[in-house]
Image (tube, rainbow, N blue to C red; front, side):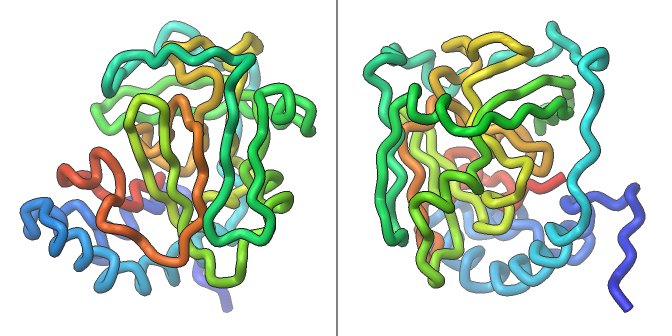
Length: 237
């Protein structure tokens, strides 16, 4: 018999309840490289087993367009808004893949678009229902063909921000590389030309201005900008 998870129990609460939160270990390690490596070496095998179970469940429920809250998505900036020319933009997808590729914005827009209306949840305590439109990361993965040993995905942004995700979350059907918000082209302040969006992760995992996606077989000491400062690595909802 499969494990039944009530809807009221989130992925994040389950990890925290099981004592697998990366934040506590990072804080105990004082954010040092040793502490970061301990997170990967000690917790990730257990995290991966739980993630595989949770991500096998149904997709996160979405909302109707009438539920969109256009004024509630706050703009947080890590290092200011980078000046990117959409006509010159390239997304590099590389690492542990059989067919490294790079995409222009036009290339991405020529692929089948997926739209979703989801709740964006910030760790600071606010949330907003937003419509996002873009390309499932799963579709890009099919093009570049990750190698069997690939287990993580690292995202590099034009402003110096960086993030890493587990492979299962990255390939979830509701994890998108988006270029549209609320039916309009994505604004530079919201991450244009391209950003991450997904209902299964907290907001700080959803990088803006993404220019490179790297598939990896192991985590590096650089887990993510905020994770390296004590935030939880998995950060699931």
